[in-house]
Length: 64
Image 1 (spheres, one colour):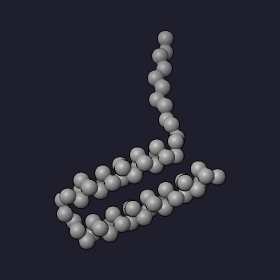
Image 2 (cartoon, one colour):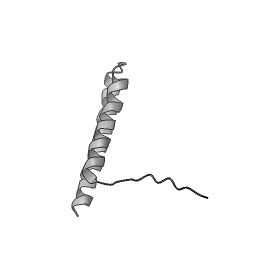
Image 3 (tube, rainbow, N blue to C red):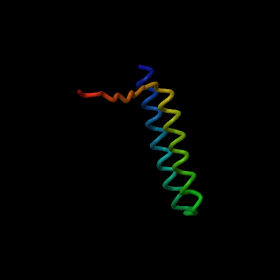
Image 4 (cartoon, rainbow, N blue to C red):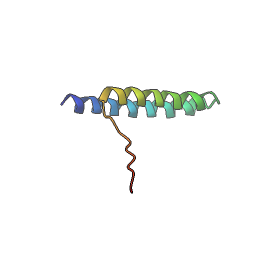
């Protein structure tokens, strides 16, 4: 249940972050925001991925 609650909270955080980003970009379309906004989303993704603990493994299989 804790994982489900975390997912809901993070989903709401991402929706709010996206809405705030759109409103901020509409009000101030400076060039610097083109670099700051993706950095914020990358940081949020890394925090969420580390906190939830879902590990994705890449497996390369050798076929003979």
